[in-house]
Amino acid sequence: MSNPDKLENENAVLKNAWHDFCDDLKASGDLIFRDGIPENATTRAAGMRLLARNISLAMQFQMENNNPDFPELLHYFDPLRKQGGDNTDAHYSGAPINGQHSYRIYGNRGTAKYFAITILEDGNTPWGGGVVNTRLAKDLHFEADGSFELLVGPEKPADLDESKSNWMQTSADTYRITFRQFFADWLGEKPMQANIDCLTNQNPAPLLTPNDLAEGLKKSSHWVNWSSTYWADMIDKWKVQPNTFLSYGELEKNKIDFTPGGAPIIAYWQVPKDEVLLLRVTPPNASYWAVEFGNYWWETMDYRNRFSSTNCHHAELEDNGELIVIISHQDLGAKNWLDPSGHEEGYITYRWIDCDHYPKPVPEQMSLDDLHKNHAGLISHVDQQQRQAQLNERRAGITQRFGS
Image (cartoon, rainbow, N blue to C red):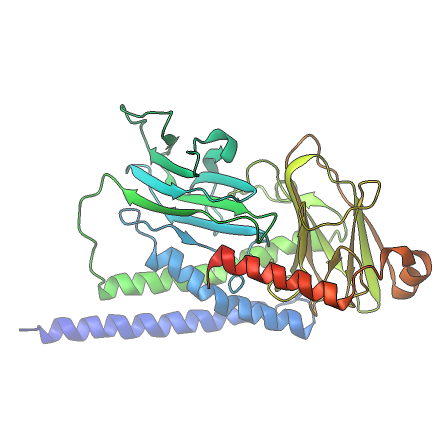
């Protein structure tokens, strides 16, 4: 027989938790209208959408997949939820783990151009703190068919066969493991398929309680506000130096889960409707490189339907090896065009991985008239039929990467 007093208390916990959750999310909307936010309708609409999109991401991290006793490898970003300068080429996935348990991760590596694993600790950012262990594809053992086994834990297993298995050590403050896959040829490379088991927990999965729900909703609404505000505060540090390429570490002391193999360099761009921005650089010899393009909120543009990136596979270089990227609101037929998608300012990232030097692009901003007058040879190379064929291939690659 149920206890009426207990039921009444649990109902109150649930009702208050939901009301607080909704109130917190409502208050988060003030961010979109604070001083300094670009006064552009598309930018502000994208900011509000960012808050809504990241509710599901917050719920995944703070309630649905936050138990290191029962971790699942789930992807973070995709075309419908983004933040923190997500790489257009990437599939990010991971699971909650801790420094006390041991885990087995197994599956097939896939064929992504770049593959890396990081173990990180909790920290002062929405994405944790410093990295405590890293493995790149070249540091890992894979079978001929791409299959692999990775053991993770505080101590190296006594019976580990390093000719067949991989091992990564955790720290006492470990809280997450992350897999990064960067796809150069979106349609030609296939994603990892893998599972994770906790080897040292034998308890049954816990049942959801009203208090669990209340705590999860509270943490989720806090994370939505924290993460969105964190990245808006961060981009303002680049905004005061437009068209200047700087790494995260040059402007921020908080440790964060960097991509191993080369820190990205980032610049803030501001391009009115009647102007264009040219970015010139000769890419280094690298195992992978990419140019990522996004809005004020650190979201990549809609890479399903618009040209918002290029990389070592997609880019067309000049005869002398130079990469010339053109940001313009009109499609002028440039070979390496980036579409602002209605935004007039945002960020652009160059990511050089595993190379001997890290060149910074040289920007040149001008009017549309000056582009036609002085750089006509850079445009009218790609017609609309070719552009659509390129988009169709990319869309097929996105479906392959994330599933239907």
